[in-house]
Image (cartoon, rainbow, N blue to C red; front, side):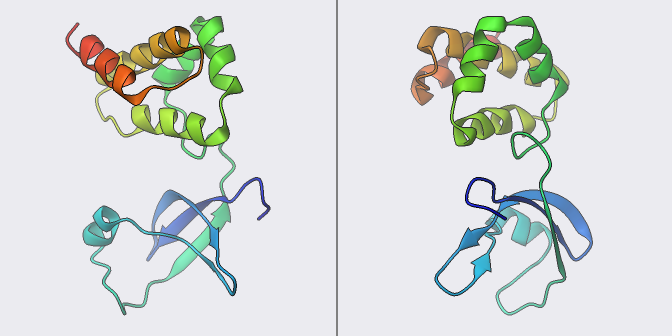
Length: 139
């Protein structure tokens, strides 16, 4: 890993891959496993877990949903603004769409994000973005 890219794919007891980040302390490297995943896999403190880690080849630290890619391809202004964001902000916006299961809802959320990028010129305002997401969800 390097200073600019610590994104990894992690398999836990043969389940996965999960998109995560490697963190470095003074003496070791570690990953954080959120409570939801620990509960789903029944991982508790003290459990032994087989872990496999590979560098994440994805551009944004998550798979890019097709709906989001289509919106980026169709909206040159929003695409330019999105590409100028920091990798962390890009990853956060992609994750907002990735976590939605319904394709129609992913499309609406992608539309809201593109609209917000154009309005804000890249200065992400969570409150304004949430209002736009609600608006697009009600269309």
